[in-house]
Length: 215
Length: 335
Image (cartoon, rainbow over the protein chains, first blue to last red):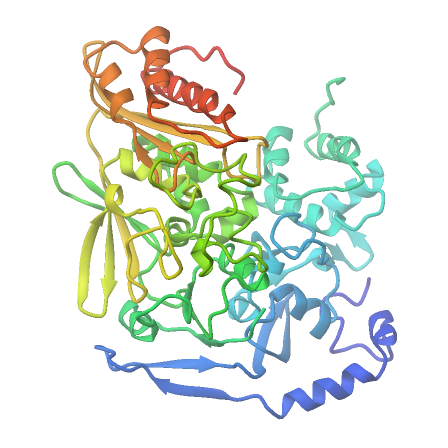
């Protein structure tokens, strides 16, 4: 993970994802790029006479600030932030599970606040700072939140983990002296299908420097 | 989802100019927590999506120095902002409670006040792409004799038995709030108590707005000494909409409750003003006994469906506990 952030644009050779995707996708991306256009259309009957820019329905050029790196791509307006990050920018920490804003696996930080990337249009994230689980590592050193997850073995399949650590990281950013109750409330928008909540509570207790009460 | 043209107007007038006269072809995008779901299910298939994110002055909370002071919340204000605002917590605890208990932390960071008030109903037949119910041009309500445990219990005269989905609306109604709405001909003010209506067919929404109108803000008078509380009965502590909700507000004259308002949520196609329950406690001290009587009165006139008679009990308890909370009584229940 030493190449995060900006995995897609500065890396020599193939990433695992690019390898899996093969060359077909590259051709498709090139074909879409040619059709992109931004149309400026006068909003009729507008008292202010201002013009409202319309985008799409074809792919539109998009710049996102992801984990501190500027990333460019072209997507149709209907493409979510999650699918843009995963399928276009190779930022795959955020996971696609329910795709309906009900599980939390896609949780990313938008200007520091946790949101569901599956229920946010990529176009709406422009001009905002996007942070994913990939950003919770500095060189080879994990942030204290994912480090606590590792130590407490707070995952089974691990698919929900990137969402959980992003939510928990945001909670500690908002209040570094938060207690276990506040952290648990901050995680109420994430679900673990394997049910590793007990180990997560161990991780929370360690981070909050409190002893866990026996259940 | 069906693809669309995306617009990002910078003024409310420009946003309204992009809207169409009939529902369905253009949709306003706030946080997207409702709209994107509907689009993914092909229940909403707009060809134009108009983002409100770039509209200047569309979010934020301000106070107008009037008597009583009026708190104005921009329609683009995030639910998380409403829930954590210290002034709202102090003066409108029922609103802070409804906002703070809504959805999940992520939803609250995304969803807007205007979007919450105008969200579509949660009926699973309505939200199923393959079901053509009354609201989608069909000729019957499938919930009437189908799976209806989360539907309305006040069903008289209603051909569609959805429940009003907003938990914030009952609180705003109890506080006597009104919405400022912009249309092609200018602004108008709609009281939240008159904001909702029961939809009966395709082309009708759960509220009274025209398809080319936009909610700009909500104004709430801050009555001095008003006591209020919100109580929701839900299956889960996060994620879900409640099964029954009661918001109460009243003044205290000595120990007697005056100007009592009791608003019910999630039991009818619109929020309901519970006149019988209000009469039951008006001018009386709020005790476990009088609060329980008001709770029973709140269920008067209900006509539950096959699977949701249980909601009568939940509603009565919600009204009782909301009244006791607002009165400052000791909570004997687990919170």
